Length: 206
Image 1 (cartoon, rainbow, N blue to C red):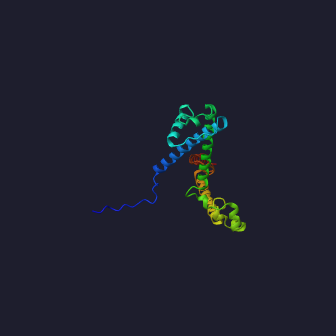
Image 2 (cartoon, rainbow, N blue to C red; image 1 turned 60 degrees about the horizontal axis):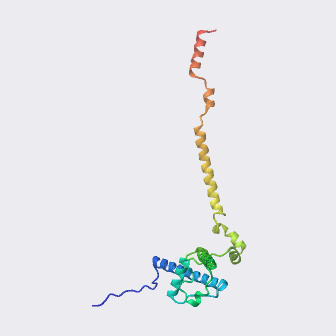
Image 3 (spheres, rainbow, N blue to C red; image 1 turned 60 degrees about the vertical axis):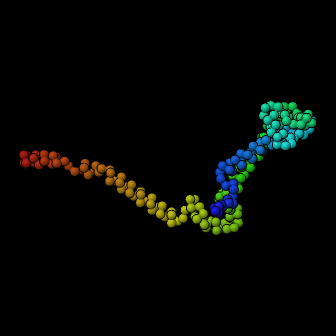
């Protein structure tokens, strides 16, 4: 009995949750290294010298000591003697974390602006590059094609003018039909007035 052939994925890290786990893990490692760097810097400046834990287990104990308020816990006795006081240690740890955060934000902004996949700005030329490649005369000649919103062509201008004039004539025609003509009604005499005048002439002949 043969087993079915399984096709290997050429990109094993292609799912969203895998990328998210990798990003979170990398961020946690960077934060831990920054905290250890702050501990070593504070010990080098205000203690007996630079300290750095050796081994994964020692690093875990030192990080636990920093979180619990006991910097240097888990270090060997020779390194523990060089650890500075808690105030400079935590000040240097905060400074190292701020430097890490600033670097991460700057890197993310640069990647989002210039290295993002599918960014249309990556293939567009600047204004100076376009002027050097095409020339100012060709740019002005093709401005209706490049920026039709700012430089409409003559045909589109003519169509827009005809459309506006037709709409204006239709609006004026409707307004003219809707206004009643009072002059013709006022000039023509009323029927009752004409009848009374004829009766007066018949009753009083001269």
